[in-house]
Image 1 (tube, each protein chain N blue to C red):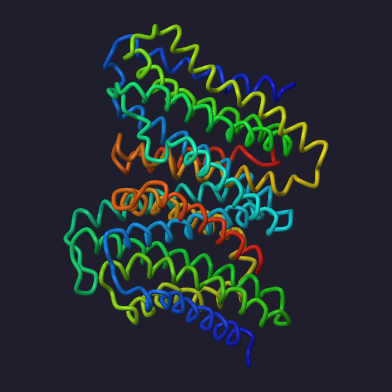
Image 2: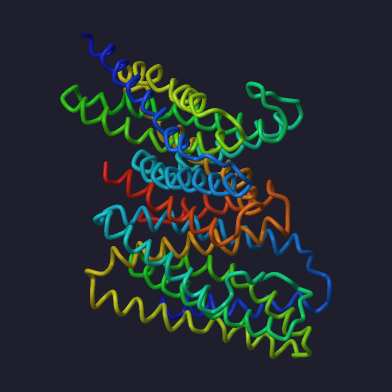
Length: 242
Length: 239
């Protein structure tokens, strides 16, 4: 197998793993306002924890570039949000404010996968010896991302199977970005901190502008804060352990 | 020495919050919201920088420390009977309210003091960054406290005194934390985790929920995320 094909196959496996994040929601039967609040809190904690990790990762390539990227990410979400407010949108058969949040999280996580795909390709650039370890690590790392997506989609009425489908969809840029990044690693490396920062900024802003305000509106303040903080710590621990 | 100066600086900004009360009604709630968002962004940014610093230690120790920090703040809220306290009611005049707000102010300046001590141990610029953050964060806190106290007939000068008093504990705790950690370097990873946990939990449980009620979500999110970016850019070992 040509190494580039191998990278594509491995990165596709990691993309599929994202779908596993929908599984916990198969066990949640009732979906009340409070469920939405707590699911939002979980998604917030996961995304903030991931961003904390991304900042550290991006800083290895350049801190200033990472922060510039992060500001671009914030601007991007702000613009997307404005656009989505202006036009009536549909997400599948869903409409209204809920569909805006669904679309927004899909955009955020899909864009996030682009820079992640580059990181995957760069990781394989070190050679194929560690391929299995890298694939396993990134696959496991993708599961909480699927969880974050499902936590937003499922309480708003999307089926568990569709949650899994959308989760996988959000990771599809990974194999497609991994191959060119693997082949032309030197060309991609300078862009990496911007991309990583962009993903971190977009996630943080999405959490602050959409998920948290809604969580506080429907859930008790301290329970929400507790869930966000604990999920954040768990996510960081999880990423460090890998 | 720097630590003492910085933590003292963070404590003395609280009385400044009493100043806008000169002309009643002159502080729109929106401004308090933005100040809270700024403080939350600074706190989260410091959390990022400290968490990054903690990455060189065993992750489990850091996570244990973070857990401890979160539980500690939650517990202090719970024990003081202030879990459901709404901290930003300028018009609230119940007799209990002033007392409770003093208690909350004192308790959470304790967590702030610990965070400051940890940060200073890690690096002087980080310590200064954390202290500055908390200094800014203490201003709106002083405003609320001052508003509540003056509404009860306490003079503005005394209100300013109380505002400083609630925050003076953090000077002591900052210095103590620093001294303890210097004597016991083995505790550093747990302390770093503790600081991250308290910073994140405080912004999630107090600053952000309040600020969303005081100003629009977009403004709050912008202020907080940009503040976060500034701290992350300035923080760390590069300086």
